[in-house]
Image (cartoon, rainbow, N blue to C red; front, side):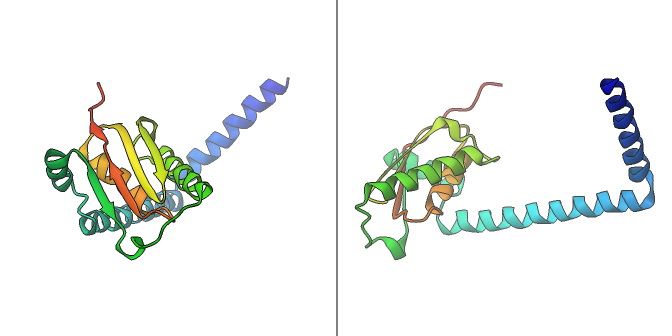
Length: 160
């Protein structure tokens, strides 16, 4: 009996939602929400692109550095003189970066190892593109307490 009532209630809720969506008010609400999401995504993309340009993290910059030295290194100029000796701070930095990488919808953080020593973060492992290397470095650079990021990430496209 409970299953039947739940089924009937689900059908009623679905019918009301479908009716609301098909009204002009419902369509405009969906359209307005879509536009807000699109504008927020465009704004976020523009901010990320600007940061990637400032830090020379565009795919061509990364390809050139990888070809030249096999590493990609960026320093935060204002924090270069600071030394973080506390091992708990390094663990906090590592944890924060790993959490952001795993939570990112743009890159897969599961193939990236993060190690921090004295505020210097080393990223290793593999990613799908040079763009993903730049995004991973940006995530690491934005973490509090990071003085420098060294990337030895390798590009290994995922099989389809």
